[in-house]
Length: 454
Image (cartoon, rainbow, N blue to C red):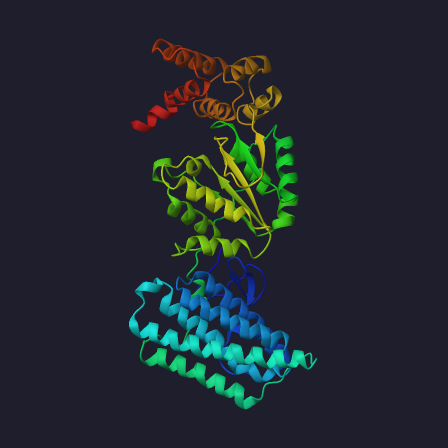
């Protein structure tokens, strides 16, 4: 999906909408902060979108003080939406709430709580007091009506204007003393996040794995966590990609499918921070201060499939392995979150119930089909002999087929190259030849590869 930020329109969902990571499309027109002619329909629309904006900001700010302020503002807006009768009178107050959310985000998005400047801290303290007072007053009014068995409460305009002026005072303070401009747009907030990682597509050559895909899909659709377990090169990642793109999975989880790859880091480099940063990046967030809370809140908003590829990288981490397992347990404990792991290790996070699916080599017929997808001009009897020598191992099959195509080898050339590399390894004292090692050496010593060094 291609998007253009700032002054261009983002159209991944519908006209005049912006894509909010982890939340969905939000109508752009409702973010206009200039006063509009009051209408009940517009008021409700503004309420809905302001609540959504505040929630997004809450997910990305590191300050607990700001998070508390935003929670109180959300509480006020929810009461206005569900309980207050004269909602149209709150139009300007709702707009001030949205503006405050944007301003506090601008002031604190890159700064942990303990590093906030004294002026900002003082302003936030005053805002906390004002917002909490408004929330308590709104609650008191609605609770009074509950006692009197009235379904909706009405708050007089003078009181509403008093609250609005308190919020305007805060915005003025930030504009003059803290030098934070109040001329903000929601597009600026969206720039705190990156685009979510593009999902991998269905594997180009994928045969002999339909039963495993079906088993994994059935389990995930019933909210069971699944681990695809097997040695390197056996095809675990390809199966995960197929599951991710399965029609039923797409229908169930829609855009809430995330694929996190860990094959680009070494097990000795992994700690809790790098683990969480990888997941946050896949979800579409720049490196956050409190990644665990942000990830958890984002995953919790709807039914979600989280695929963690090459999980042995973090399960066998030399640092923070226990904390990483705890984090996975925390994600998976959410009733709406389903996890799919691919891993070489059978040691899984202990506090989740896993369905373990062992990934075996390909069957003979599937192995031949996979090879012939790249190199069709070879007799089946010769091919079976060659592929049985590589134990019908998917990566070995792919490497051999690619080497044959790139070097324009005849079937006999391919067998000769394979036999030569196997004999070389045996002569070097490696004992029983390992099929993958022989295959790799065959590829590395092929003419097409050796030319790369010239």
